[in-house]
Image (cartoon, rainbow, N blue to C red; front, side, top):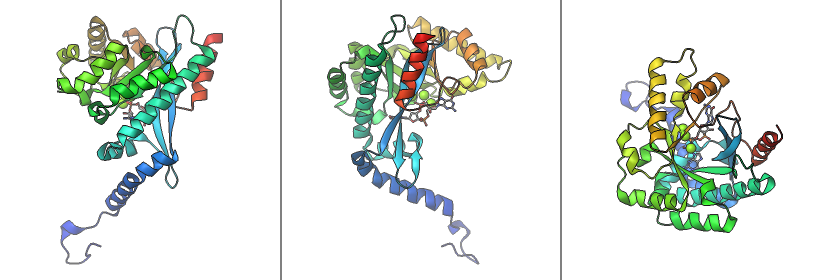
Length: 288
Ligand code: C2E
Ligand code: MG
Ligand code: MG
Ligand code: MG
């Protein structure tokens, strides 16, 4: 407890900071048992083709149903899992569950000829990239489930790949050679050298939500418009597809479609939700 009178001013207690530290510590130590007990679950958010509005797949987003704290978002516990290494088994679990789910969707409605089989996007932490089992685990999961490598997209943040050496890129190259898509997540926030893109085995750029947000005002900031236009044309000239995150309004979707973005994701289409929701959305697609 901080001394109230005549005490050292630098010792004044910050009860909130203490509480946060305690929770962090508590959550960190609870992670392994939570994985064993099945407290994690996955929500899926549709990826929509901007040209025709059809659902092409979904991104898997993990949540923790904590017995005391309720549903925790990944921002609360992924950094802790990365710190302790639990992200490796947790990430493998997410990958397996999500690919299984993709298989189930594919079996139930097959996708149309125009859209191809529904695809699944799964986030990878930098720690998973340096873990030697990544390629083998992924191959096994795809084989066990019978999902085509081309229906899987692994998302890696731009910041994780900045300055990446060849050792870090090797597993991604192997996966890309097998036909798995690699997406550069949160693109545009990491100050990466655009020329560097050629060196990375990526096939998709996921434009960060901050760009989408700047399309909210009308007219949108002309400089932001130019930047997005430039990124899209560079991406397309390198044969990369562009996905936009955080689309919350129809105006944003329309602006981004005009700018040439390929796929979109955001609350305007659907919030992340249980797997049945995606199934319903794709069925609605097929009958409309
Ligand atoms: P991300 O991969 O960039 O995922 C997009 C985030 O934006 C998700 O937050 C999603 O719920 C949110 N979002 C989607 N549409 C909108 C929108 O229209 N407006 C706004 N404001 N937000 C939107 P979420 O689910 O909290 O996930 C946060 C981050 O946690 C993810 O960012 C990803 O980096 C990480 N994450 C989630 N699941 C996993 C996982 O299984 N493994 C790893 N390593 N990281 C994960
Ligand atoms: Mg992502
Ligand atoms: Mg993202
Ligand atoms: Mg993001």
